[in-house]
Length: 69
Image 1 (cartoon, one colour):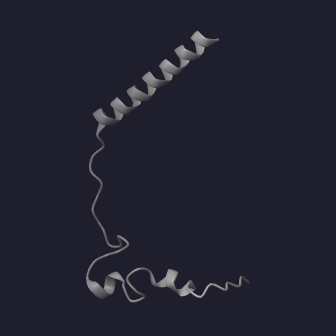
Image 2 (cartoon, one colour; image 1 turned 30 degrees about the vertical axis):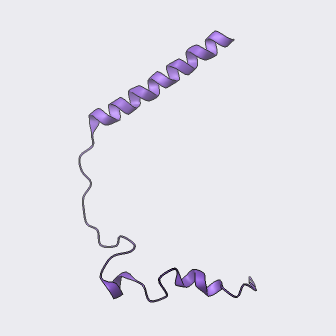
Image 3 (cartoon, rainbow, N blue to C red; image 1 turned 60 degrees about the horizontal axis):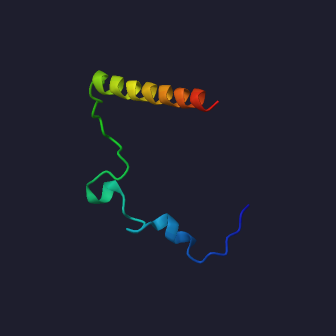
């Protein structure tokens, strides 16, 4: 069992808004419970550009490694 002599330990539990500040009490959802929004479609062009950029970076790193060895 842990013992803590910090007199403000309960402050961490209460948070900046107090112990009673939960989504049920003031009308908004602090922790994203109940969000039923579906994810959108995958942006293939953006993912392809990212993969191409990573590949180009690896190619540059390989060429530099070959040039310095």
